[in-house]
Length: 63
Image 1 (cartoon, one colour):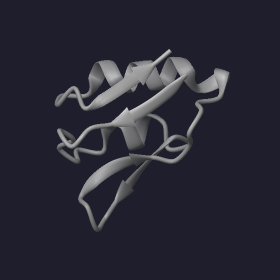
Image 2 (spheres, helix red, strand yellow):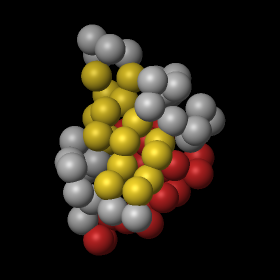
Image 3 (cartoon, one colour):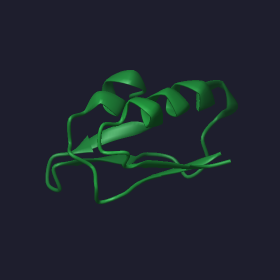
């Protein structure tokens, strides 16, 4: 699985709170970024949850 965050990100940091191993807040850009190119299997479900809960629908998952 790969994940990206589009420029639709509102910077509410929900994904950062759900999965800090994958998502990080960029203070300069005021939005979240993905810290890894490939998501480890054991974190895939929480990344899917973050994508579902993203109000801006800014988290894009490639299976």
